[in-house]
Every structure is written in structure tokens, then in C-alpha cells.
Length: 106
Image 1: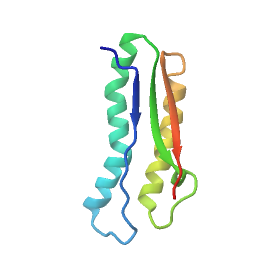
Image 2: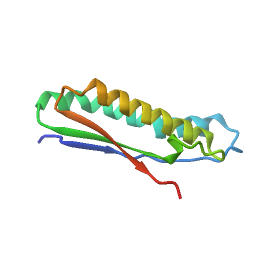
Image 3: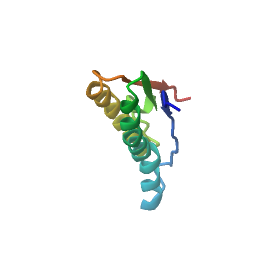
């Protein structure tokens, strides 16, 4: 079995009035650390096969227009956007393509 596509879409958002760090850390872990961790576990497997494959990260408008009601969410989405762009350049000569889907915030 060959892995051809990995699409990472994670989400959680807490309002700015949440004071407990463990909730903030959970938000960072879900929105940023988890996609990065999973990507780095899967890239070697995808490269090993040499067949064309894709990694698609899902971000949102919060990456470009900070959501004042959810600063951690916006910061994580901006960081995921930057990570995705950097990873795209790092893998540009490989069989693995890196893309991003921008989800609209309602």
C-alpha cells in the first residue's frame, strides 16, 4: 500500500477570556504541533516510495486577518501557513507536493 495524499485539517478555538494555560496549550497542540508532527512522520514514507504524492494543510482566513476574539487560533493558522510554504520549497524537487487550502471563516 502506498500513501499518496495526506490532508491535515485540525480545529479548535478558545475565546480570549480562557485563562487556563492547559487549554491554550491544547489549542496550540491541535492547530500547529499535530499537523507538523504528523507531516514529519509521513514525509519519509512518501519519499521512500518515490511516487507522486501530496500533503495538503487546511488553514483559514485567520492566518491573514487576525481574529481578535481568538489570538492563539490566528497565530497558529499563520504559523501553519508559513510552515506549509517553507515545506513546499524544501520538497520542491521531490515527488511530494505541498499545498494549502484556505478555509473561509464565517
